[in-house]
Structure formats: structure tokens, C-alpha cells
Length: 154
Length: 188
Image: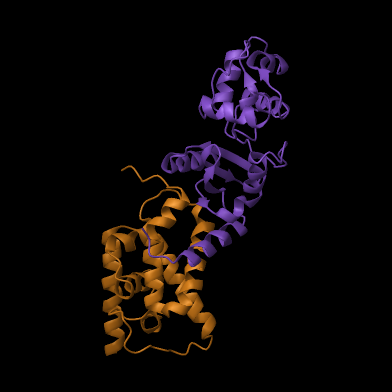
């Protein structure tokens, strides 16, 4: 199957910057979102020259945004203290809420669970972000959820 | 089109250029005396000046030549913008900009290097330029190089005219060639 060509960075940035900023504002609030926005796209820029194709760039940049959030949360709270902002505008669980819960999962299952339930990405996007297929992403997410239930019951 | 505030957008574009990670930073100068110009710079220097740019096509072209990290970043081209402004107002007769001609075929590079030596207010002919790169019969090929000059104005292909003195042709249109030669006092 033919893969998409890598668009000039300008096109990529214009196509996704609004969505990335909205996502970061929901997670981190308007004040902190600006810095995270810049960091997300600077990270994307650094990696952009190494991309091998232009498929799933939305999932790719959303994953970078999610990682940027996690790193910032770590920097801000090195003790791992959990802060959940009550009554956010977003119906999805905050990453801070989900991340510690999934700490014990194998990396791939954890990423699939977080991207699915934390960020509501579609399975094909998660697969793209993880470098696997849509089915594999679905299986990783459901295996992760099963494992979490088991741990909870144990 | 996007929901990003202008200040945040500008801040990112400047920061991106400052990292040195861009293959090309560019901006579009909207109202020069010769119309709209897209100006692109790489880490090595000025790499593109384009009349009447069609951004879609120009970006693809820059990405193909220099790499995909092509971003509009107005602050990155400040130096080129300033020198072009000075040139258009008649205050500058020679550009003091590094140029990036990567990927040009050898013949192009030789011709463009000779072209760079044609001084402000002077003209030469396609044939004379061909002779100066050691290919006296290649006037037509030199014409092709002029037509595809990636950095017009700064690499002054407008100073190259036909043997009869007629303006002959110009990638940016004859009107512009005439305007530039008049600015330089090479046409009365």
C-alpha cells in the first residue's frame, strides 16, 4: 500500500495546531497550554526530519502532545503527588488520573489504554502512534483493561 | 483557519527558526515594488526568491530541494528583507547575503557564479555569460539557467539581455525586468 508523502512542516503545523492547542488547554489549562504547545511542535520539528512517511501525522502529534504533558506534570510534581482538577470541561479522565493507574501495565498496553481512554484516539491512530496495526492496538487496549480489572480485583 | 492566537503562533515560528532545525524558513513579502515575493533562507543562506508565489507549489518545491522542515518564520528572513528593501529604494547596490545553491547542477552553479559578478547598473548578454563559463556556444543553455534562477534579483539575471540589446525574457515577466533595470539606471 502506498504511504502518504511527508508534507512540508508548514502544512503539518497548520493542519494540527488548533487541535493540539485545544487538547493542551483542556488538559493543562489556558495558562500552561501555551508553553506546552510550543514544546510539542518543537519536539515534532526535531523528529520531523526522521519521519519515513506522512501517514497518521495527527495521531503522531497528539502522542507528542500527550508526552509533553506527562513530562511537564513530572517536572512540576517530582514526588508523583496526584492532583486531579475537579469539574474540568473535559469529559475524559485527565491524564494525571489515568497515568498512575496504568503504571503497572506493559508499555504497549499502557500506551494503548491511555491513548484510547485518556485521549479518545481511534484505534487506527493508536496503532499508528505505536507502530502497529489497528487490530493490535485494539487488542493491546483491551488486554490492558482486562489486566487492570484483574489487578483491582486481586 | 486555525484556532491559535497570533502571538502564540508568532512565538512558535520564531522559536522554531531559532533552534536551527528548519530546512528552510520563509516569508512572503506582500508589497514590494515588483509585487509579491516569497523569500526563503536555509541555515547556509538565502536559498529562494520567488515572484508571485503559489505557496502550495513553492513549499513542495522547497521541501523537495532542502528537506521537509519548511516553515513560515518572518523573523528568520529579517536580514534578507532589509537588504531587499534597501535595494528597492535605491540605497543598496550590492547584496551582502550568503547564498545556498545546494542541489544545482554544476553548469548552473558556474553560470550563476558568473552572473553574481555582473554589477549593479550594468548589463551583459547570454552569449557573453556563456563565454565566461567557457561554453561560448551555450547562450541558449545560459538562457535556461536564467529562467530557472532560484534567487532572482539577488542573483541579477535581470542584467542579462539579448545580443541586440532587447530585454529578451525574464522568469518574473518582462515588466519586472524593465522595472529593475530602470531602478538601476541601466535603462533610460
